[in-house]
Amino acid sequence: MMGIPATGADAPTLRILGADHVGNVFLKGRSKLGVSGTRHVVDAVRATGAPAATGGIRRFVATDQEGGAVQVLSGPGFSAMPAGIVQGGWTADRLEASARTWAVELADAGVDVNLAPVTDTVPSAAFAPSNAPIGAFGREFGYTTQTVSTHSLAFSRGMKSGGVQPVVKHFPGLGRVTANTDTTADVLDTVTTRNDQYLQPFAANIEAGNGWVMVSNARYERIDPENIAPFSSKVMEGMLRSDQGFSGIIISDDMCKAVALSAWAYGSRAVNFFNAGGTMMLCVNAAAIPAITRALVAEARESSAFRARIDAAALLVLRAKLG
Image 1 (cartoon, rainbow, N blue to C red):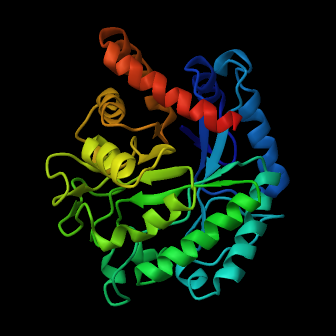
Image 2: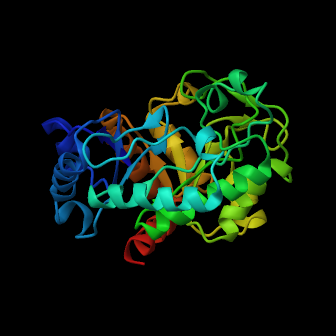
């Protein structure tokens, strides 16, 4: 999944989208084009390189439409969405109805995947300002796993009923770290365990049938001290696939501009992610895509086991598109 500006892609970016057979896009940044203007951007993206670039299969088009500080799309036809902490004060019924409205707006604009809801639990209001990725921006629904469960489920139900696939994030949780993986290397969670109670909101969404989970870019000392989560088979295959019984799409957080990944070359990031059990790599930096493509093709030619992993990931995405 390649990032393109929500206001529209330039010619070099569109060339990469077609030449590297990119199957999915993420509308990044901020746009005030409204529903109609965004639809024009999406239509251009879907047409780029079609049908040869994707074998005639449509591209998933995603964005970040959480509310508050994280709302990529605005302008005529898009609601002003409050922050997660405000949504968490609503009843579940009200949130579900609102999320359905927001989803219909996205669907009308051509967006079919929303990288939300935030399913991380921040332990307290007092800690929230110190929790750089979530609490500092009021992205959390609340301070108990019960509140986060009920409201992330309500948000997800509303999205799905409005025609948009929700993405539960950031497994196994960013609510108890102090640094932000977008801006800091080696963000470390020292408390979360493989059977932690803070996993409950993720488990509830998986049990409810949500088909997408995003993995965080942090490292979890008490789960896999050697690997950051997107390189950890313990996190993706052990916890998500085996423990949680999740059979859907495991998508990464951004792996191209996030400082947490800066120690690895682009190609190594991709190979490590898929080797550990990932399904779809999110890269917001279009210029990194050719290097990623070359690395994946080279590894697949070299290793039949890796080729099988890539085929299985692609098949899972194709089934989601055709389902």
